[in-house]
Length: 175
Image 1: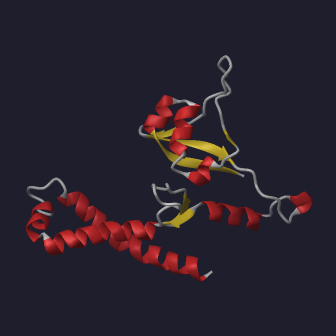
Image 2: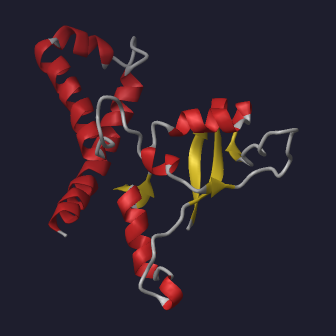
Image 3: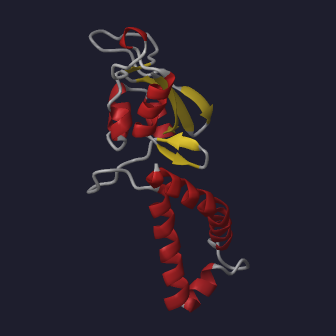
C-alpha cells in the first residue's frame, strides 16, 4: 500500500538525506514502520539513494511511502479494499474529513487525539481569561496586541472544527 505523506518540513526536505527523514519520522511511529519510499534513484558510492520529495509549497514537501499489507482474504491472500482501508485507519487518525499521521510526544505511548489537543488549548485560554483578565484583555486587544488576530482565528476555527471533531470521536468509539 502506498500513501503520499504530506507536510514534511522544509528542514527535512532541504537536507535531502535518508538520515534527516528517519530522524523526523521517529516522532511518527506508524510512518516509521514503512517498508520503503520513492527515491531519486541517484546512488552515491556505498550509500542508498536519497528520498525523492515532491515540493508543493516552499516550506513543505511530500513523499510517497510504501507499507507491506498483512495477508488478506482476497485472491491469493491479497488484501481486499475493505482490509486496506481498515489497515489505513489503524495507522492514522481522522481529522476534518481526512486521515492524518500524528506525532507521538514523549512520554506518551500513542499520538494525542485531536480532540484532546483542542481541549488543552481551549482550557489554557479559558484559564487565562478567567484568572488573568487583565492579561487576557491585553492579549485580545486588536489595537495593541500581535496575538489578538491569531487568537481570534483560533477561536473561530474551534467553533467550526469542534462539533465535527466531537461527532467523529463519538462515532470512533461507538463502532
